[in-house]
Every structure is written in C-alpha cells, then in structure tokens.
Length: 563
Image (cartoon, rainbow, N blue to C red; front, side, top):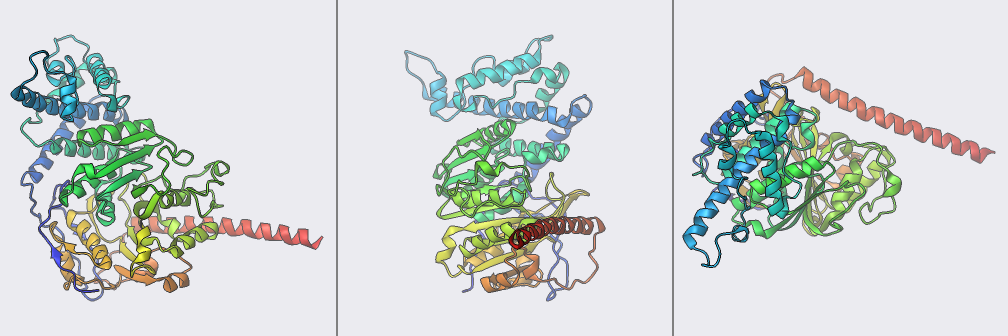
C-alpha cells in the first residue's frame, strides 16, 4: 500500500490522560520495552483537572457507603440516580434562563412543552435539586427523592420506568451527605462533565461489584478500542447486550471528534436485565442522547427486526452461555444462517446474530471468549463459513485482567461485510495486543489513550487509511511503523491469507499467526501464565468431550450397520 499520511489535528475526547506506565513488548528488531508514561496534551485543558474532581467525588461517596451497611449493588442505583438528577437540574436551570430571556406569550407562562422543545427534561416543582436539598429537618428525604423521580418520569415519557425509586433504603443522613457532595459540582461547567462523572462512577461500581458489575459495564478503554477500529459515524447502531450503554456513549464521542453530529446516527439497544436497561437510559440521558433501548432476551427476541438493518453492531455479550433453548431458534435461518452449534455454548449464536443484523456494507465489533477462535466441530464449521464469506476483517487478542467478569484474556472480533469488494477480501489482519496495557492495580489493567490510538493505527494502515497521532502514539508508531505504512511485525501483527488460515485449521487465534518475539528479559508472570494454561485446559477438555461424543456416535452407528 502507498505511504499513509499522518493526521494529527483531531482530538479524541472522553478519557482523561494519566501518567501511569503502559507496557508494550516490542519485536526482535528493537528488543526493548516502551514506557508510555508521558502526559499527553488535549484540546480540553480541563481534562486532567476534571478527572481529579471525579475522583474526589467518588472517594467521598464511597466513604459514606463504607460507613453504612449497604452493599455496592444496593448503593449504585440510587447514587447514579442522584448524579442524573443533578445533571437534569443543571440542564433545566440553563433552559430556564434561555426561555426567560426569550420571553413567552402573554397568555401563558413557561411550561413543560417549552423545555421539551429545547430537548431538555422538565422538572416539576418539588423535583428540582434545590427543593430536595433544602427540605426541612426531620423530612423523610428518601421518600421525597423517590417521589421526585416518579414525578420526573410522569412528565418525561422517555424516562418511564428508568429512574431509581428506592431511596428510603439508604437512610436520611447518608442521602443528605450525598446531596451535599454532589452539590459541589459547579453549574458553570460543560454538560459533558456530568457524563464523565456518571461513567467514572459506573466503572468504579463495576469494579466494586466484581463479577456482578461486569454484567452492566465494559471497561471504557476496551469500548474505545472497539469504537476506534469500527468507526461508527453514520446510520443505525445496534448493541443487543447493551449493559449501561457505554458503546453508544463512545460512538458519539468518536463522531464528535471527527466533526459529525449526534443526529447522524440512530441508537438501538437491548439487554435481558431491566436494571441494565434503566442504567443505559440514564447514561444516555446524561450524555444527551436519544435512542430506543428496551428489555429483551436477544437469543429468542428481535424487537427491532434486525435482519440486514444495521450499519454497525457492537457488543460485549456474556461468554460461554449454556442451556440456551436451541429448539426455539434452530429454524430461524434469518438470524442464524450458518446453523446451530452442537456444543452447549452460546458464543456462535451471538456471532451469527451480529453477522445477520448487518447491512451489505455493515461492520461489527465485539468481545468474545478466546476459545471461540479455536473451537472445533460445528463451531469450526460456522467459523469457516464466516471466513469464506469474506466478512472477518480484524482479530485482536487482549491480555488478562481487563474485565470484571473474567480475568482470562479475550479476543475482539471485527466483521466487515463490505470487505469482500476490497483488496483485503481474502485476507485477515491479526493483532496480538496481549502485551499492551497499563497496570491500574494488582488485579486490573486498561489501555492508555496512546495505546488505543496505536492499535487502531495498525488497522488504519492495513485498510489504507490515514493514521492519527492526536493522542500521543507517535513514539509507539516510531518503533515499527516509522514510514507510516503497514508491515507484518513479529509478535505484534500479521496479515494472513485464506490459504494460511486454512493450514491452521481455520483458527482465528492471533497467536497462531503473529509469532513470538525474542525479548530482552524474562517477562514471565506466574498468575497470568497459569490463567492462560487453565483456559487452554478448558478448551482441550471441551474438545475431548466433543471427540468422545463423536466416537460414541460412530461406534453406535457402526454397530447398527453391522446388525
């Protein structure tokens, strides 16, 4: 491909830059580690300050919970609801000033229709922040806040059933202190600060809840990587396992960073858990997004009639789900065109669901268990059909400890139905990003902004697009891609042909293609290696069970034929 010009004048918003060290194991040609510890500049000069502000808010609110008898799961909904209410009041007060300055008809005063015409939620008397903050001593604060939430729902149809109304369980003293904490959010800031506060709290609640938190929250750096590679900038977007709506929020930020407007996309989402749907609707409201999000079991329900309807599909579905009633869906060849996997595992049911929802030029990006890239028998056949249909575009392996539900590594899949009309039709890009990370604490990792941009730039070069350097990835790029042109790099990336993939048994595991670099020093981490070996053991065990069943079936068939 021709040399790719750089593109450094665009900013990526939405994630504050930190100074923690990032890790990247380079290939044999460089034999060094890259320390990604620099603070990178941003067009938003307040970004670093805001992050400290969010941290202080969280620490104060979490200290209150620690001194109560509440579990994080009992505390999260009401706290997020208060952040939402503070944001709604911020928008309401700003709209009131605009409406009063504009003036109204002499026959009537300002009413809820005026606020809705500005795209702002109407807050009735008694449901405004100042009303609740200044309630008389001895008032049942929990009951009043719950009533306020119900009143807001009554006059804002889009929020029907979305707001928490269980504040009486929190206790008056804790609620009073929480409102005082959130009252410190200044009213002269940009509305996006509320969105970042909401996301910061979502992420920390997910971390506190561990396994349970992972059902509603995908770490923002992983979501950003999916969005940067997928590039959702127009049309209809679907997330059939939407959790708290992080994919939608990051998609909007991507669009805004690239000069697009929110109204150029339409958002659709489902989740099987009603509480997650509520969180998603609140999250979208705080980010001033509109869309259709509803409760549904995506295995059996398709409320948006998704067949070949969507320009982009993105998701972090639950891994390795068992006991799906395949009898109910086996004849639905529209949603599952490659057939049902015989193994008791839902991974390839999800993958077909994403594939079937895409328009002829649509793209999908999603998180999947590593085992799906190497699974045998009917899952291998489905995977082979996907590859031969020329829709699998990019595979990215991610290291352990990025997710709260699983500590094991995982893989990001990217499908592109329009790829078959390009020179990439018979190729797939494999990226091993398992050694690219920033260590947050002993148990958690994420990507820095520059690492996200670097990985995304590898994909951009592969596609023949302009690279981007606005998030500080120039140093990472200089190691192997100084000419800004794609090339295979041992231990990092490889463009494989279909013949090479067939030789590997139609595996989509990046590790089979990129090779292993020689490293200067031993980077062996026992816990990480043990987790990887355990997953490999699980894969082999499942394969052994499948082969055992196949042998039994063959023996039974031979015995019947010999009679």
